[in-house]
Image 1 (cartoon, rainbow, N blue to C red):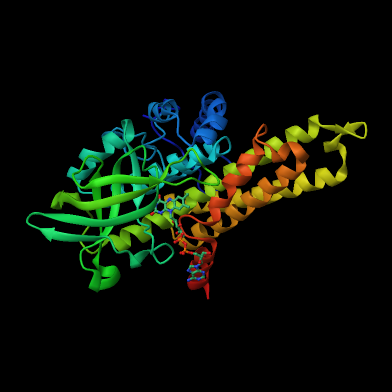
Image 2: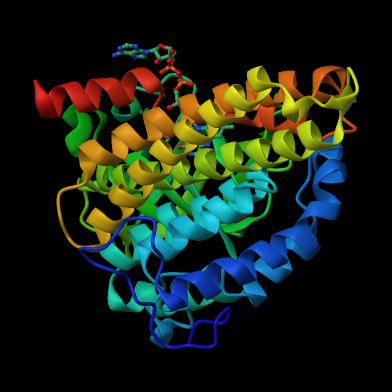
Length: 393
Ligand SMILES: Cc1cc2nc3c(=O)[nH]c(=O)nc-3n(C[C@H](O)[C@H](O)[C@H](O)COP(=O)(O)OP(=O)(O)OC[C@H]3O[C@@H](n4cnc5c(N)ncnc54)[C@H](O)[C@@H]3O)c2cc1C
């Protein structure tokens, strides 16, 4: 049962216009927009200033079924599609991209990886919790392995019936709030990427600790932390997928996750554009609204055109994934393009607001800061271009 629409099935149009939503999808979006407007918007500035996610926001996300959107109903989820997750990330990010990434990591990386790779026992243990009250995190990056993710040095030594993990993870989104972590470690560093294995680590596991929290430019309410694994002991049942198959899990989930970041950046751009239009219509100079000047109209029209292009790319990639078609190139392209559009639109929005765009009393200053991350995480823009080139040239 979809908690936001009260219906059982989400209908995804096939063969129709990409941006034309089905009745279920429309209702789903309307409910999220209302929720974001009424319950997230009033907290955005405070959360950004204090660099923390308000617990009420997380609680409501769970209550609305937005933390387990595509988790099947038999595991307590909302039984939606990947495209639904993308819509949710877009709608929420138009109000706060920091909340957007919380929802994104939960749905497009953590639950997504578990649905695909977990054993039945693991699904029964983790999916109901992730759908109802537990935030998840996805821990691949380390200090010396970012773009070159498979150079990771965290190791997992087999001892008795389980594994002992040692190492440090860096930049882990949601870490402060998370109870379940997907951690990538190598069972054999000499085997290169073939040693990489994914483990499901629960927060209270002995030897596991969340370390330093980063002080960031943007998406400041989203926690980004170091993880410390010091003789962190897990049983063999915590291995996700096969031993040595972690590189495949990482590649495949990140290919999908990228569409979510495209959606986050799309939502951000839409939010910035809406603020810019509203302000331009209200602000008067030379005896008229600044929106009446053609130069302003052309800028807003250009921004809207770029947003439309980004939207088509994000929606297409998500719908291709749901249709079981090849989507890797489209996912890389949509993330690359949407993050470019978000940065440009947010930057122009700052200019449209003039001095007001440069201060924290208005929302576009924050959206401009938030936009920068789109070109960095889940593969930098150069890494997206490398993927596109590899697939096409
Ligand atoms: C806020 C935030 C949240 C994050 N959340 C997570 C998370 O939840 N989980 C997680 O595992 N990671 C997370 N990350 C890590 C993120 O994915 C990495 O920062 C990213 O992949 C880039 O790695 P790096 O920072 O080491 O940069 P580097 O890889 O060191 O890149 C530095 C520069 O070199 C360029 N470069 C590198 N290799 C090449 C190449 N072959 N060709 C051309 N240019 C190249 C890059 O494009 C970049 O411009 C997060 C990061 C941030 C900042």
